[in-house]
Image (cartoon, rainbow, N blue to C red; front, top):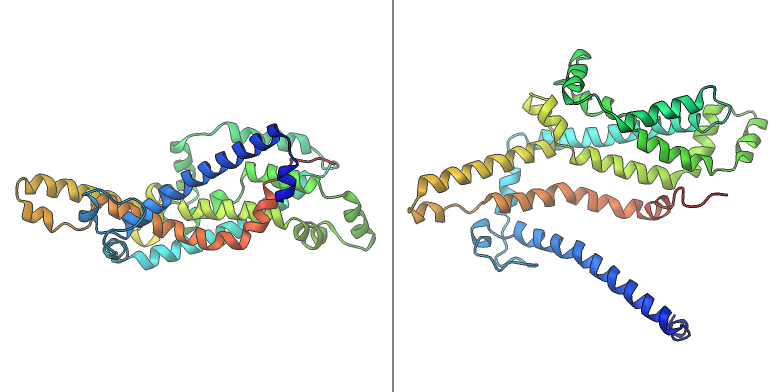
Length: 302
């Protein structure tokens, strides 16, 4: 590697050096803010308000996380988030892949019309009020399946998977049909195993979307025991900020009252970010090798 570098021209060396510098700066722009979040999450909120905490806690403390996990319905919120992430991701990826397999066929009657119709849904939306009325009319509001059923199909994911399927050589399907396979058998036994990179990438994106979604639980669910983790933590943050403002106004010059406040809205926010992001960080290494392949989808055409 070193010998190859010395054989490069001056212009090529400068180009590589600039590339490495830009990549290093980009990595630092991602890592350093996360380290700051980590430091503030594990530091008492009152002490953090003094400033001077950047990439390491000044005083190690779990008070912020204790506040997050002391909510009475935190266990049910975790269960709802896990349910919607697992069931919603598996069902969405499988059904979207089935639709993509059908639409990639050139012999499908009306295939171009269906693709244009699906693409149309990416450009225009009916709005939040008609969407709420639709969910209410089909009895999905205050129902756990509101997290799964409306998101079963994604036009964007369908187009990506369809593009990947089109790169699979048709001779594989022809050979399978000669052996007596039907369309569903070909899809399960040939197409899906060959499509692990795109399935892993779409699955990861879908799972992250399910895990981080707080909007659905906040607007379409009224039962506290049906709210996912992201919605619960969002409500806790709003309550903490409101309580902090109220105490500041009530305390006035009473510094003793303010000194008792160890959990601030900002410190609770950082702990919440760690709780929400940690599962994704743990899962990502297992799909990273497929992710690297999947991001090249559509970049080459045979």
